[in-house]
Length: 193
Image 1 (cartoon, helix red, strand yellow):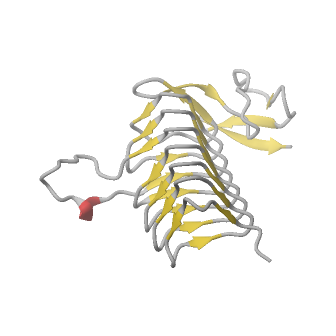
Image 2: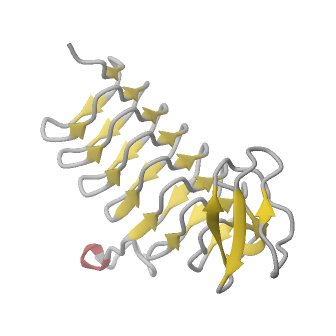
Image 3: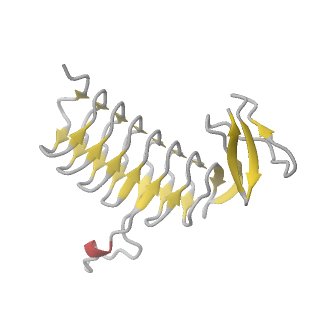
């Protein structure tokens, strides 16, 4: 018996792959060929293109469109009305569908409400994009970025809490979950949990 829930107003293509335990809410449109993992929550009015890939345990809030080339790895959170693009220089009268770029959101990353992620960008694992930010460059693992254009202002733990400023000579500890981190080559790396 399937544990997948699909609301009666949702449109799901016959060849779309939907993992067990995934919940799909009102007015969602999932195209043929799209792949959605297990235990995901797809909020109302979400669009998923044919080549979009959604990992396991992903939460996509309302009014998000995942275009061709968007990849959300396991555990990603997309806030409401987050925006993805698929072409760098769109024009109404110029067909650039052969120029779609891959946008990768790595494991555990968070994208805040109304943030915009330009195509061709990679958001590192457990990175955190603040609400309303416009991401124009790759984001390092665990980086906390905000603004337009988005700029790093700190570091984020796997649990989502902002980490204290790093000590280059010692490990830093998350005040929420206790995970320890060290700064190595400009990126936080988990050392113990």
